Image 1 (cartoon, rainbow, N blue to C red):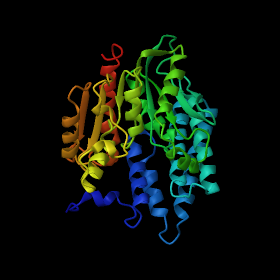
Image 2 (image 1 turned 30 degrees about the vertical axis):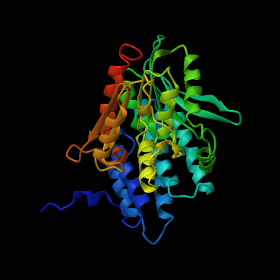
Image 3 (image 1 turned 180 degrees about the vertical axis):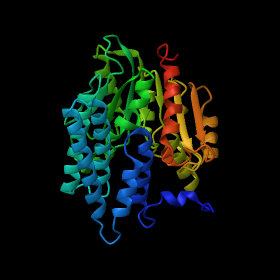
Length: 370
């Protein structure tokens, strides 16, 4: 007889929500080449509940195995196998780092190994990718990976992929890059951390101008001879990226955007207004959303799962009330029946990314605002 609830099979460690969520991410990464299911299940069997260090130790060991396999394949000229193994290795290094305290030296060692695997992957790729540094604020620069869609010399459409403060860009190399490449889109994978350690996230979160990073990125892309600047879009991976939504309002050079549209900001405003019986939402200290601004000309796609933090009915209500006079706003809700319904589509990111990049492909087909 089939188990009554298959979702329990995804829960590795019921008492550790973070570990279970990371294991789910690793399993779903197998769909895009960031892991293999057999290796994930092997590690799950080797983990010891009475040994908190076993998670870091086993994933790091597996990362080294994949890294060594990649180097051997590269030396023999087997570039496809080398790329696959470097992608898995960098993901496993990321998993090894995940539960450690940001100040833990072992975490930083794992991050450096992850980044080295990413750089090795870029060199084996055809056409090769490159590491780029983008000036942002006086004492801090952004770092990214630029992956051209083709080796041609013409200018092509480009997608900026960025996550929340503290999120590392390396995951995008297997999670998003294939979707971009299959549609002829170049990709710039970014994070806000630059070359800083993970504990720099606290400093980032104190900034009130995170959206200014996107303007710096656009300035950089404008200098590249292989980017069609009329066809540049942005994807805010994850779901709380309201700083990207704010950037969309301020950045007229974007041709399309996939982000939360400021829904989370709006939800917080509504919550605080209700909690404190405030009739004037303007006094609630939460940033405005592009959904509230009729001057936002950039088409916006918002995707969410019906089982996520913000309920689908509430999201539809917010969008409906906010879209009068606004630009083109599309809300796509993934249901449990089709999967992709979890927060940030964690149960099936592939399905959501197919929809996202199909939408981008259409929008970028003929230029800004197509």
